[in-house]
Image (cartoon, rainbow, N blue to C red):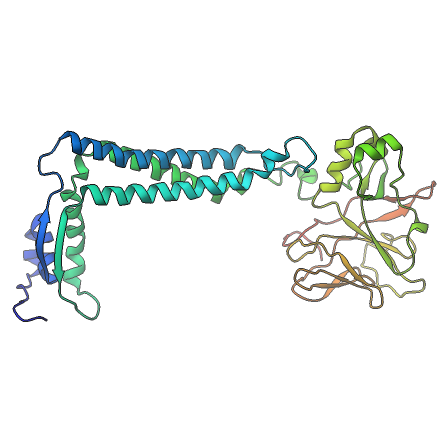
Length: 381
């Protein structure tokens, strides 16, 4: 301790209980070896026009923060976020979803911080203090008087009588807190189990509808309108694939030829992509129990969605019959019901039951018999 300083007498617990908040705050200063060289009130005469202007300026920052927080909450809940292709109406609104919620959230935090800083600069006393340095943690007494010291600091700023600032700050903090709640609970508002056996987690676009055939179609990279107007064939036949080859296919119904949007929707559905693999003739295959009739000859169809984190398992090694996911190097064995044999994935890829109709086109005989995608607790594999 520097020369000339001294420690105050430490009161007993009984004496501490008898001290009022002002005395506790003074004791806290003394215990911290703090000497106040200057402590001038910013507004010694309360209620002046200058003070009111300063109060409105601080409240304005909090009000702007509240507006930004409200924009964030409304955008998070109601802004269109479903994917829209670049050539489709509404793509601009979809593309602005992430920038809008990101900018409004960041602006909320920024304006809230600016309001706090403005309040400190305009209303905290103009103080100059010198404190002696001490090593180690504070004692029990110092920690006990700290709250009194903080309360006294708040009282010195006059926050108790500044209702405009309190209301605007409370509004900003409240809506900001609501935004955090929306983020935490937003994914739980929609019930994924609604619909029972027809719930979204169970059903994919491969599910039969009204007894209509679901064909395996290829993506030609052209618009649905062009396919419909030119009557272009998109359905896949067995002779379209060479031995030891693979093609990504999607669900298609003949009724889709009357609805270009429906055709495009089935291409965009996250659980729709399927790998149609043709093994070499005579390849030995191990079937999973209950799925012995899911394949057609040397043709096998597996979901393209990796069971690890949902990346596309888009690589096929024909010599070893391994399906590879490029994201985290998971590998699945096509000749053994696409079970994982390497990498972080622990579940087999769901297999789509397929056959060929009397016209010679591949069709799905049913939907997947388990949910598509990663981390699902009801998966059988």
